[in-house]
Image (cartoon, rainbow, N blue to C red):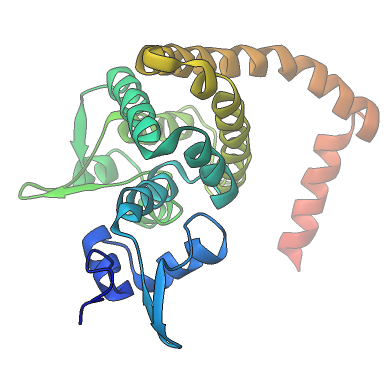
Length: 252
């Protein structure tokens, strides 16, 4: 069925097909104000949409899926600079991440043989902390994912047991770092994206590297002051109290 008055307009089903995003998701974007309402209606249940929305729909979905940004932040990015600038920004960030990540890879079997329990490996994948690569050679891990797994295994090898560092605590790490990333991208949106101009790609790469260094330096700076603050608030016997609390919980 075609809109005879505006033949260039699309039905929702066609908009979903051409954008690769489900109709229900597109309707949610419209309700949240990320997309314009229907360009025309030919009945109570027949709406028509401008195909020019397709690049924006793809950009929204990509930012959700690869950067885990909330819709409010995505709307600000797109409203300020448009899908083309956002796409250029993502390409620049991806280039930095690929350059920083090591090229080595290891198979799932090799990682399990090194001591990583299969159930723990699957759990890390389920929360999105690592993403296995599946191809004709089987399942393997590469880049930062492999470094993450090697780091966890190195902790175990050093005597830091599962009881000391339960893998479940990584969910809290992930949540905390995700909040930090959202702050970073909000600042980035209000500064580099607004003023970057034709230097956007170069400035994005520089800002990504700088941000990573700053996070490491700030964490180092905050470790001892925060420890002292916790001791003042909760007392020097805090570790012993927590150990007794864990034992009581295990006894129950």
